Length: 379
Ligand SMILES: Nc1ncnc2c1ncn2[C@@H]1O[C@H](COP(=O)(O)O)[C@@H](OP(=O)(O)O)[C@H]1O
Ligand SMILES: [Mg+2]
Image (cartoon, rainbow, N blue to C red; front, side, top):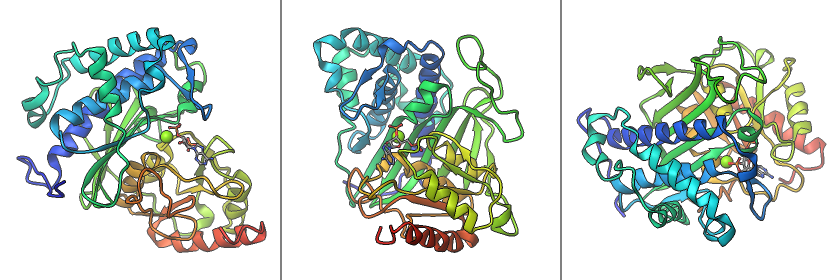
């Protein structure tokens, strides 16, 4: 496996990877958005861990892996899904829908940047077989590790948000020797900027598309953080974290799901920091995106219970780089950097704390105190 930096005509490191990732995520977002608007709840099947997996998850992974696989055939992919359940007899109608949706997304004559066009003919014929698409899903079975290049993909991060009409994200990152180098995140339900009114319940669903929704976040290590609409304009805007003079002015983001992040501990940390505004609850890595562009300031993800859950690399790779490139610092609850070189999980880390660089240390101190008070100081 080579760790060399590929660049295209722009001359910047990872320019080709950036373009291909944008193309893959954009196509996957069109697909998930379509599924979202025509959501057929009956097509949801249940994995062993009981999290809902939809036709959107599988099709989006098939699309992204097909595109990554044709441009970078030797790059391993660490993807959330595999095709095991899909290959079962009873999943026939789900498979048929995936084949149709993935081929539509791959065959869509969307505009591509010139470097991507070169290889587009490899996958955009729109007639891949069921087996080709199932194999593409299974390209995501890499075990990860600390050497060489690999992609991390969450085809629909925030599955619960997706199903309830909240935030979700298609997240793709390139990791080289354990360090995230490129991150692209598509948030189809996130307004283009924080000043847009928040979507209200009932604004989603068939035919209710709003022009100011759907935001793409793009980052390459050392090159800054950018956003642009997913659908429509390709003009990118540089984003950065908000300037606040003290943490008392901050607002923080946390998961909607109390089972994913301890709301009680988060509240105590906010109290210790003098934060008075209510937390913003949001599904998916849209939380990283929100603080990166200054909608909020701190992302707290405090482990629940005994802290034995191991965070997955695809749940954090693109978001963590985005925040770092927007002026933030991302670590676990002890202030250790997230270690993406340990396989499919962040097994050397517990929880996540993301905040503006200058204020991160103060947040970590409050985290330690709150855990101590709960008798979880050993975490
Ligand atoms: N006990 C737990 N602690 C922390 N994260 C968990 C968890 N159980 C599941 N998750 C992860 O939390 C992710 C969603 O995060 P959030 O709550 O911030 O939206 C899920 O991603 P998926 O929705 O892709 O399955 C899943 O991987
Ligand atoms: Mg996820």
